[in-house]
Structures are given as C-alpha cells and as structure tokens.
Image (cartoon, rainbow, N blue to C red; front, side, top):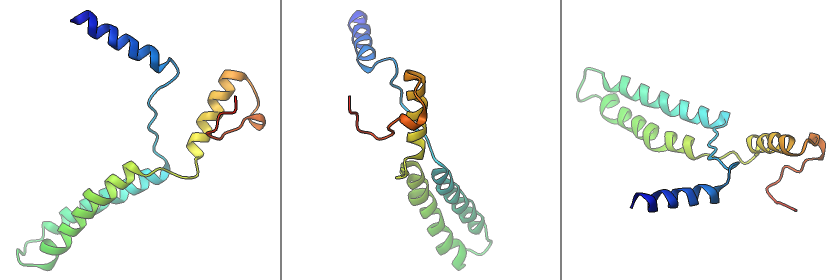
Length: 115
C-alpha cells in the first residue's frame, strides 16, 4: 500500500515538472483592499464597544461594518487579480532572462506561446 502511494506521488511530481511552482502574488492593490477590510473590522469592533445597548452605532453601524470587512473586502482583496499584468510580466522577463540570456527588449511578455 505504501509503495503504491509513493509511486503515485512520484508520478505526479514528475508530471508537474521542476520549474512549475504555485505562485500567489499579491499586488499593491490587493494589500490596499485587505487593509481597508481590516480597518473596517477594527472600527466595527470599536463602535461595538460603546456602552449603550440600544444605541444606533453598536447595533446597526458596527455589524454592517463588520459584515463588509469580513465578507466583502477581505475576500475581494484575496481574489482580486490585477488586469494590467505588471507582476506577471516581471516574472516572465526574469524567467526568460534566466533561460535564454536575451535582453528584455526582445522578450515577448504575453501569455501566448509561439514556439
């Protein structure tokens, strides 16, 4: 049983290749969106600590701020993908320089492989 599992793992590793790694990179926009979410969460809890139980801020505004912080901004910051492709292009240029030794002026940084 153990040999079967190790052979499957070895087969999966060989299929994946040596150069392929999972690359999750956050851009500045991702960190900004997550920061806004964290600020909403902090201010929501601060508003919730107000002493009045029947007040408008701790019973209405604070839960709304917490909801938007936890359920909107944090997931949006994690899942947001920048359409400009600045991070991807920089990685492609670094990899292409490493592999072929060409200058950056001759490197095609699109997702389409022509060869």
